[in-house]
Amino acid sequence: MARVFLSLGTGKIMVNGRDLNEYLKREALSMIVKQPLDVTNTIGKYDIKATVKGGGVAGQAGALRLGISRAIMMHDETQKKVLKVGGFLTRDPREKERKKYGRGGGKSSSSPRDSLERFHTSLVPAPGVLRWRRMGRAPRGMADQPKEDTRWTSPSRTCLRRAFILGTRRGAGIPR
Image (cartoon, rainbow, N blue to C red; front, top):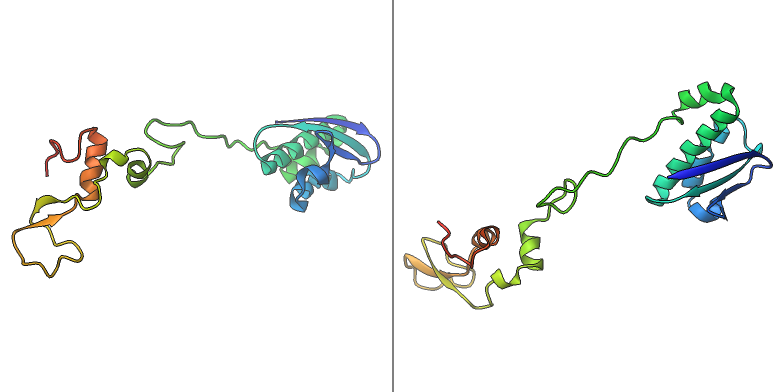
């Protein structure tokens, strides 16, 4: 959000009590802020005092550009067409998407592996704990063991994921 105060002067731009280049630090962002002044040939004609808050530095630069454009248009109505053609009077309509339940943010989701590792370490078997599993392939390092129908294997990741989703103990009441 930006508030811009425009007055006739020498072309000094102050943002939150600091010089524009000191506040934004990147030349590309200060160029974005000065674009409306370049297009309307008013560099050095106005002093600008602005307050910005919220968002990141790039978003604040875009808000400043829109505020300066609107202030120039209100001061000099003949500049409206130039600013409109340049796209300086158009607000960026993008907003943060609302958080949905079961997800990390708007569309992002945490993977089941992350959930297991971060929050549910009790579901992960202790090292060396094995269980019976029928018709499975031998785990690494056990290929030299005699081949039988049943072998020692550790619980699969899918089994742990199902246990996590159902909120049950590992392997309890989960159909195979």
